[in-house]
Amino acid sequence: MAKFLLVLDPGHVNCNSGAIGFIGVQEQHLNQKICNRVQQMLVNYYSVVQTTVIQPEDLTLQHRTEFINAISPDFMLSIHCNGFSYPDIKGIEIYPKHNGSQLVNSISKRLSNNILSKIIEVSRLEGYEYVNRGVKEKNLHMIREIECPGALLECGFITNYNECLWLNSSRGQLAIAYAISQAIENYIETKILAHQ
Image (cartoon, rainbow, N blue to C red):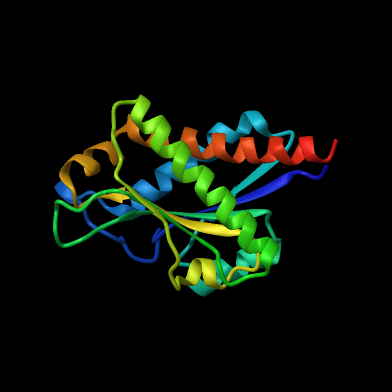
């Protein structure tokens, strides 16, 4: 079986800062840190997965999706943090690709469900209780314009004080990265077993 190619997109890096949270925390920096941690965790799984983190040197959204389509990965995950004008809003949500073929949409939704539930589970074990805002559909460039299965993950609201502390902590970033890597590994193992 060929290696599973995963592309990680750190949202807003070198485009704009994205959301701004408490104590000046910038979304782009958190997105980059989480992407890097996921890549590091999947290194031990290198025999069956290859991970590429987009290094956006002032790349537009169009350049990012063109890059993704050119390498045709098995899955693309765009990692983001949310922001809102009301600081009491919090929670995690994910947007799978939904405008592709039936197979692409099915893989996108399945992995999205796995990633979301795994992050909630691991975070709970680490002492943080997420509000599950669910698997949703939205017309977002990063998932609309890719041809492969993929999703855009909103890891939480950095405009909520407690969630910002969680997302800005090494513990929170490691929990999220570990959960994503576990969801990917579980999906790959299921595929391997299906081909045996």
